[in-house]
Image 1: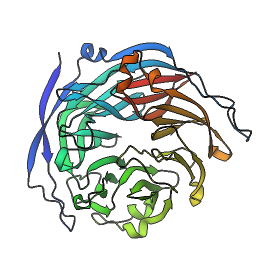
Image 2: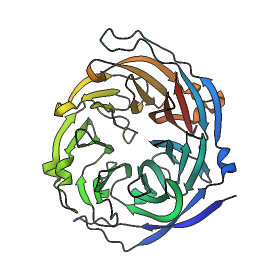
Image 3: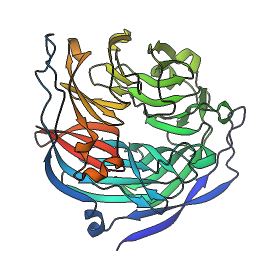
Length: 423
């Protein structure tokens, strides 16, 4: 068995009122990397299980609507890893080329004292797992594959220390023994990490103001340097929208409506590190018209390629925002039966990840700015054995195409990852 356990250098960054960083305290975190092909193959199961789509509705009469939900078949099931503290839960998926990168966290609840996470790298061209890693100290929530620097940048949470950014070295996209550094940030939990050409942005959430939540901006080539800081509580996932050159982040407000904050990234990028001009860069704050509930839930904003933003508000449904040429107006509101965690899309459909299943919406109107519910998939359909339904929580999904077929990969909590072919 080709299994390595090694110590990871962790730099605790003390955030002062001036946002200065002092690298004056270090500790270690152990990573366990598994590269043995025989062991990794045990995590992958090839299947051909059609999904039952219920509650289908007639499509909208509007131009460009879809007549019905697609048929969908589970073709690959990937088991979640475990650590001594418990089974891990799939939290985020990123796809680069033919590879899928998945993060896991322990997900023991807001009052948990045990933390831990996992990473899996799966190649859907060869249908094999190529690498995996686990740790027993940090919940890994969100992953950026930083090809420019051959590393993974992972947003997460580390017990009483709160939000972290974890840099894990790769070699050609594979996990490797190399630079591994954990940067402690303000905030309860780090929820996303985004890179532009020269800057790495990290959003940290929670409502404990004393922990300094907000957006942290680092020079991409010098993560140990002093970051720029935009103070805000309750920040969710940030998205960098390339065509409009905007940085967007969703914010939950205690007892108030959620907000989509839009920054002009050109202004940000013209700033001088470490202190960027956030005030000048702030373009607009869009009131979502409803609260984000529950607090500290998963709320992953999705930006479609044609300048449409899909915003999940938890139990308060989905908002569709048109951002073409700076118009920034809400075009549709969809209620959900459950809690919507995240959204992804292709040209025809939007796929909503719910705490209790999966919903499919057809897109209609110009550029697909209106939605129509076409069907739902219950959590029971995501597992082969009904006894395993309690492990399912649909946290996040992403769409991709390969060899002429369209797929959606679903992070299904402790039920692992389901790769679904759209037939």
